[in-house]
Structure formats: C-alpha cells, structure tokens
Image (cartoon, rainbow, N blue to C red; front, top):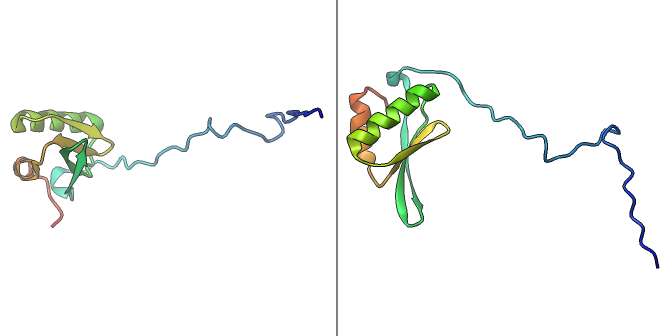
Length: 109
C-alpha cells in the first residue's frame, strides 16, 4: 500500500501561518500623577522565596525605571519592572508602602 500525502494549499489561497500573527497587547498609555494612582500589593512565592508586587503604575517607562532605582536604593533590595508593576525581592510591603507614601502615591484600602 502506498501512502501519498500532498500539500496543495498556497498562502495566496487565504491560508496563513497562525504562529506569525501575534495579537498586540492593549496597554494603557495614560500617565497619571502620583496622587491619582490606586496601587495595591500582592505577594507571590517563587522558587521558595517571597516577591512583593506593587501595581498598577501609570507612568512612562523612564519614570518607572527612575522610581524603581530610587526604591531599590532606599530599601536595599533587588527589584524589576514587569509591564506596569514593580516587583521586589522579599516580603517588604510595609517598607514599600512607607516609601511610596512619602512620594505621595495613593493606595487602595
């Protein structure tokens, strides 16, 4: 018995590769003043260690990087930016809240 498999589809025949088209993420580019933010905290455990997450920030990328640098220096900890949130090493939500409060950021209750 002879198995024959033929590919006859052409990309011009309304066929397309589904792994080429990635949907664009819709992100809010609205920039708000620090007192207009409504930040909240979250904690996650990654590889046995706690990560403190603060989100959502409505700042441009440069301002967010500057804020992260200031906070990392004052808190003596590591951190990173993920989309519109800041992630810090350790369970330091109270210290982060104090520092952001001095910079006049608002929080959800």
